[in-house]
Length: 492
Image (cartoon, rainbow, N blue to C red; front, side, top):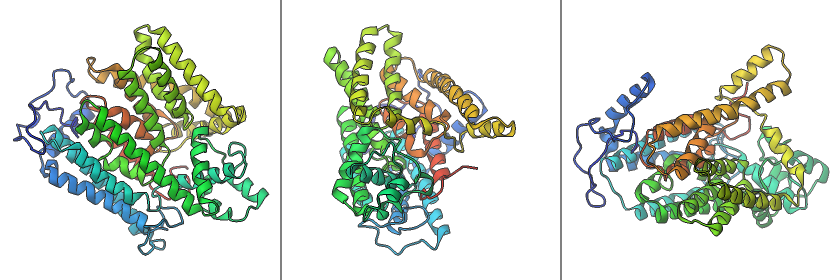
């Protein structure tokens, strides 16, 4: 990864060129601290060895990335199988691997690992002077995305839940008080069984935890799909892919280093696998987040604050996690005592969110609060939960203890991350990244696609050691939670 070597490079040559390799590990940016702790030192040693291997050759790195993406697409093309929804989208035309779980999981895990190595190799090559044309990367990634959105979603059943909530909403129901199971059981709408048989077993009795903006997106897709669940899922996949590329185009046009930003997002095989192949709404949250961040960096005054508030309100209307970006943007403003700006942005955001929820009422927040009590491995809070069970504490007591402790841990970890990044970097991008990454590390219920919000913030943060850790955490979560969503993974 470009940051993984922590080597300051001389000015790059012409686009597409690679400068001669210098002695690895000799140049360290003045603004970057030396590795501290045995784990960090060991990681730096391993990275220095790999960073000057053939993997950092641009052709090799791009090839490895392509192999990783191809393996993931094969899994989608062979649906239904143990890692996909039990349905087929237009390009899922290869023979099904349903009776063969081992080859499916080998393909999926290998795809995750190759994607990680390919990303690392491309970023290492970039740190050594490789300057590909970002538009070329964008076009290549767009071609991959165009194929991927027509393949059955891989690694999760979330898109089936999206489609079911959209179907409920499109037919006049309230997805915040009605679960997929009760809607099917009580209304018996013709064709609805095609939707709800796709919903993961753990989620059939769960109402929507997504915001009203997400529900509107889901309702739009379901209004097109009608009684055909696969069509609704396909529309959701296409919308998700379009937003993913839209974010990539925004980064290409507005980033200080468009090559680095493109490598971190549009051409990032790890993120493509998790967001596009999985079809997750976190892509939309990341879009609102980066728009708010870029406006905060470039637009000042009353109307700039109003626009930031609207964007944050829309993001929260998709998933509540967008509030982390709001806190991250407020952090440097509060330190600079810009009370009026914080008040304006917060007021506009709250008004937007209130308008979004006005048609549903406070009952729409109940599933969100219920979901906040969930704990899943590999979160260490799962062991706290197990300890509470061993001490015969009530479920509510354990949930209250964990619910009070994890935000404290998040802010503590965010402060440590913030301190690890040079103080001369723009706080309006460093603070949102620090807070979103810390949330990923300490939140009791986290999946690999949740990292989208941290990745999109990281595209604007100059080189730092956190990239290695975000990549590793994303891939480890991907390997842990790879599956078709028919069982809640990692629960004991």
